[in-house]
Length: 532
View 1 (cartoon, rainbow, N blue to C red):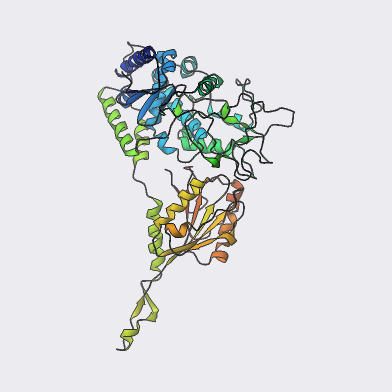
View 2: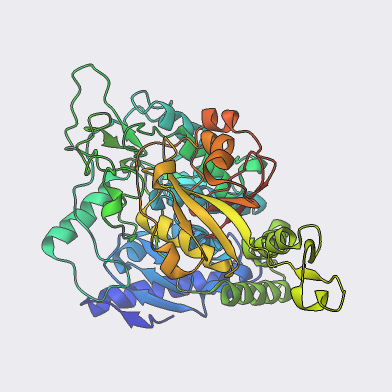
């Protein structure tokens, strides 16, 4: 195997050694599943080979381990050389399963680091299941060849109380060794690291205390969206500024030796080394970042663990990736390879035709305009009346809607703009009112639009940026907005349970447009993942 591209200046001998070692691994993967007479003795894996080998492989020192964007694979040659062949087998499987499950495409606008943790539990669990199928001990082999890992239940306990780590992880000390504000280049960025960046990269490699894996992952947790939502609900949320994941130190005199990390809220992943770029919305929305009197001075819970690879935004379409996966599965079957039964079900779910919210809204518009019929018998056409004919006038019915726009601190500007842009799916005979809301409903800031086009929607202004409480909207919308044929809620779906319990079904069609990609279950109506 030869690297298709080399980023930066890398010693030729280093590149050659990495190529030789990866070639040995791919040679083993390309054999039959039960061929235990070559390499590590684990047997081949034609499915992983078929998905990885034909794709471009790039050599770079811009990251500590490996990475994929769904279309290419990136390797740090130093990491390849120092890792055992068995360890590289696990890494190859890890990388391939990210692509197979289309994890880069499914992230949406979720918190990048938390999504990376969720998908790592999925792929590492799949790798461990494969080791079990090969009659190996997944705990011993993973720990020996990759490193210590933390099961999902233990990690959930850590999120609940990071000041009392679970058994076996007593060496974790909150607030220490936190990442400084140094942005490393993305793996595909064609430049050399500065000395400062190189030092930070090496520090991050040494700072990893554990990986995210679970050999006994429960069946209901075998989708990353389920794990993400479960973990997200355990993170602290500031009621004042809406930031997520900031832990306040107990009042015992303990100080954060890693510096003030209070700006590490939802979306702030500049320091994670994951290559996910975020803008100014990562700061405390209500207080300008780092100065919130409620949650300021906290620390980053994500500074403990490490992912086996850098997670990048995808550059491959779902259709092309699905075709590649399907081709690899067929090739694996021909080579007597092992294709997990669950994989075909999962691939079917990810590539099946989906009913979009636009499909639903068109149905609602037609239903609203139909009224009691197309003809209005309360009014007659004037011209036929001269001949003594009573001909009803044609209805020209406009559909009226009410729209709640989530402007709480957890909604980024991009989320709000993206959600509002979806209203352009409504045609010119749909008019309505858009109401901003966070912990209160800003009826006095509502904007009425005569038609759902870009010019009208741009009149909407953002107010609030605090907490979240929407129950009053469903109680009072008719009093403030008048008759509505249907209601639309644009939100990231991160609502409080207490808010859910107070919401009353308005007896209207309610369409929830979810901007975060979260697996949101509405109390009534129907939810659509805009990022899915």
